[in-house]
Length: 143
Image 1: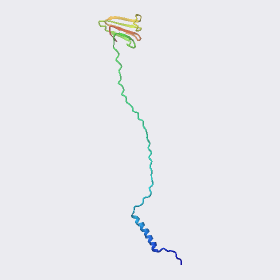
Image 2: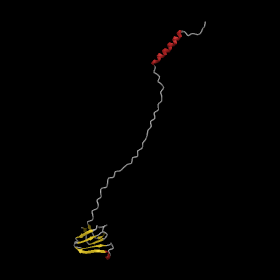
Image 3: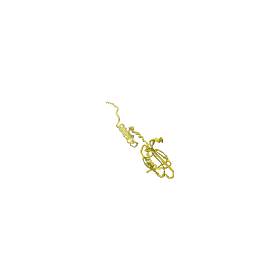
Image 4: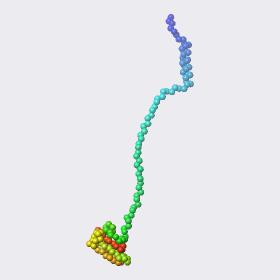
């Protein structure tokens, strides 16, 4: 007869029970976690630069008024159209002697005189642009 080793039914049943018992006993244990996959997150940041230029608000300068035209002309020599306006000038003369002269230039030479007058009391002359006027001893006002 052929004698091959045989595993007895009792041994086989015992191995099965041990395997089942160990499988049943493992139900009370913590479950083993699945392998973790590592995830890396990259955040891209863009930096924007803004140039800020400070501005200043200027308060407009108050309107400057033109100086009031000169109303009276004291003794002196004036160029008509620059220092004194063309036109007619009057003096009340007062009690003193008053002299005026219209001249071609300011040399005050006798040949440069167009017209002149020495008066005591009221006096008047009319002058044109480009002439010179000399006043002495009184004050004249433009009429």
